[in-house]
Length: 310
Image 1: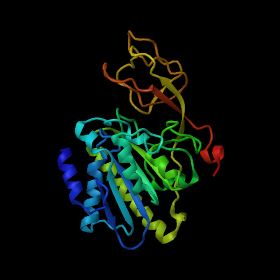
Image 2: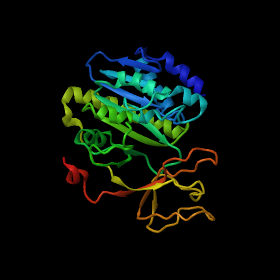
Image 3: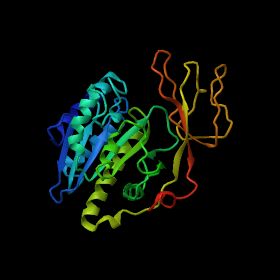
Image 4: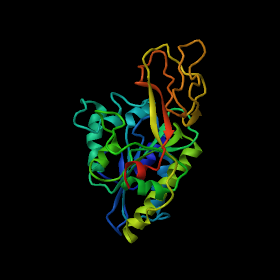
């Protein structure tokens, strides 16, 4: 199935000159949207939805007046069924990163990202999610887009300038460092599914329609209700291979302070505070240990524009 989708991707629209990227040129304005797919090789679920939109653009069934660049981030990892080959592609958009296959790929993709008017990066979580969620720092520029996209997603946010992985750089951070809006949306559990296809196609269509509206009417069209906003409140280090989470935990699952999150017969892990669970990890016995075994997020006590500025 993956190879069929990759073949279809290569036949649609026109090449940008950068491998595994395709371009639509609408001809009515020059605002450029970049759509990122599969920066992590095992997060394949956005591809069929993107292909549906690309097909609609190619046939004329969907109109977009500007430029839309679609890229598949890590095809070698996708073919191997893994997150990455040598390094996490979504951490190496910086010259400080050591040389690797992913660092070389990030350098090529930077050419697409440079100067874009909006970057939307579609991801999936390793485990199911009770709801989709945006994950990016608070800036009024991105807030306008998050509001206007009008999804059912929550927003995991933080003050502007605070990195998700200090010392490293994600693709959306690379774009934000240029003063352009960069947005990451976690769609739900990784893999192909009708839900992922529908969600990715819907958000891409909405994004393109909004950019057409911005060109015609200005940024005033970027309005809407602010989604529920959370911020990270705890990151539990994965310090010991004997640590294990109890089975069945999912992203955005509510937990209470003191709740036992560890599996029976393993060292006790408790939620230090109330919140929602994010990125619970169940690594294989022979896998490298991730930095954290889980994170928690808590609702913001006030609107982020009050906390950090409109």
